[in-house]
Image (cartoon, rainbow, N blue to C red):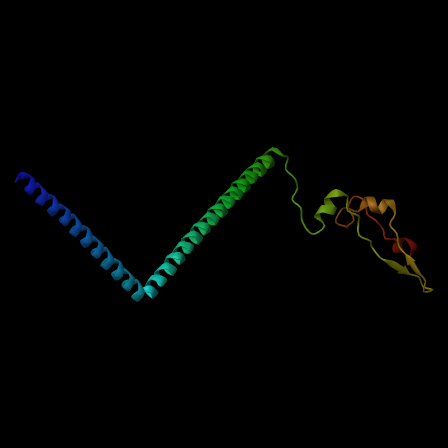
Length: 167
């Protein structure tokens, strides 16, 4: 009797295992069928979602790239600003150490500071009574007597050539 009970329990256990296996297979098939039906119905929605996910990923990468570029640009601008500040400091320090110079004025400041200015001519030409034109030239005394502004100095009055000749 003990062996018959054991055999019956063994048969019941194997049937229950077979029933559990069959129930799992049926449940798995039903789940797969439901999933395929749902995918068929919602295929457009899934396609849109996948496209949106791809767009979101691309946008995220683009934003990261833009942020990196902006950070590099800010670093370059900061570097340039510090270099400008250093150059300005160096200029200020070098100006303090250097002797003072006269300020430059006018368009010809570079040329005027390099050489002495020539006095302006009194007259470009002189017409004689017979109609002949004679070019007037300054003498060394007149050049020395005139100052940089082209006016005669009070120390040495210069008599124009016309007055000397009596014209």
